Length: 65
Image (cartoon, rainbow, N blue to C red; front, side):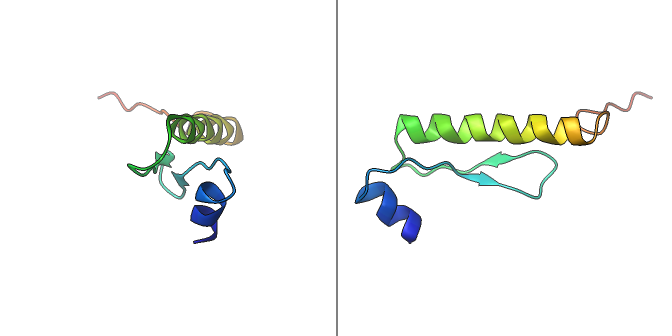
């Protein structure tokens, strides 16, 4: 509720990402602005890159054959 109050009453920007999966999952609402959706995408990219640097070769690993 605090996040919604900051967004609607305080004019704050937010970003929504679900953690714990193999890749970050972007979580947005239909009421979110374009700026909030872009912030969520940017945050997901940063988290995915950080995970790749923390464990090279694990993220995006392919299994052929």
